[in-house]
Image (cartoon, rainbow, N blue to C red; front, top):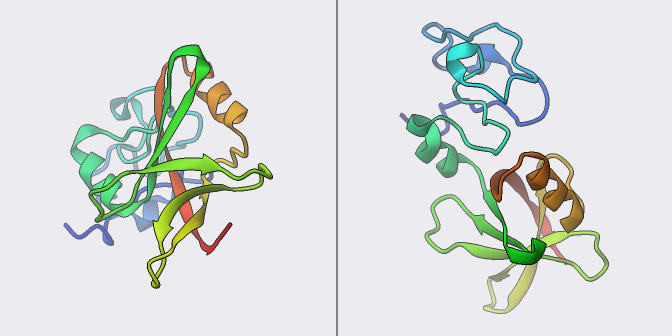
Length: 156
């Protein structure tokens, strides 16, 4: 199935079952989905709605990674945060940085002239600082999460 035909609900906001291509077979179609990210889809959560750590069900993971830029957040020793960005259709993962002003997240890439530029990104959920990401990971009692992100149309 083409990734453009697959509907993945947003991590924040309403699940719109009418956009989904499997709504006729889905046992969770039309059910209230919010606050259900902490248990399995067999209990009524949309199988394509990521859980609290950001993972979708195993059979949808490859399609999910092919549809969105995803940030892999790993908490290391001493509360060090490692963020890497996986961009659809690119094999190379890129390290994610925070701007000196603390305003933007960015990753390094080459522009059309071959110069290195800092491409701005936004993490879904509005996490604006490393502390917010670390707090989210700690609240989930884990050391690894994934977050969808949006690559913005400007550099920092």
